[in-house]
Length: 116
Image: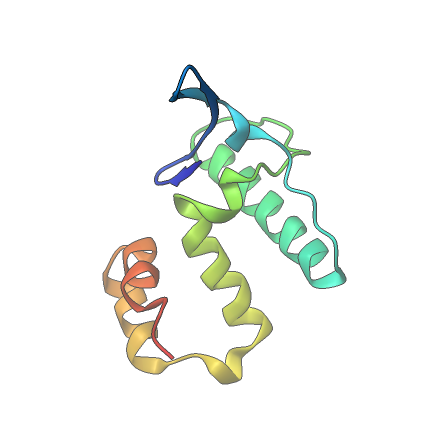
């Protein structure tokens, strides 16, 4: 069971005595493992973003890890948009791009993500 939001909630179910039990986990903190060259570029992009945000908070934390929740929840949704906007600028919708400058990026992606 996945629950993306500001983080990535994960749980698993077991079935016994005719009922399910939900077991929460910290699975969202597991490493995200890129498999293609493009995913490797995304991994480096996200790692740089995480480091930048840490520096902005006054931390010099060394980041060598990109978790699953950094990819598919919270700020990761907006970061994915920024990454793919750079990879495929010819597909950027200018009306959506204008909204990205004035609204919460994650909300804009959520609103328009299913539209073709």
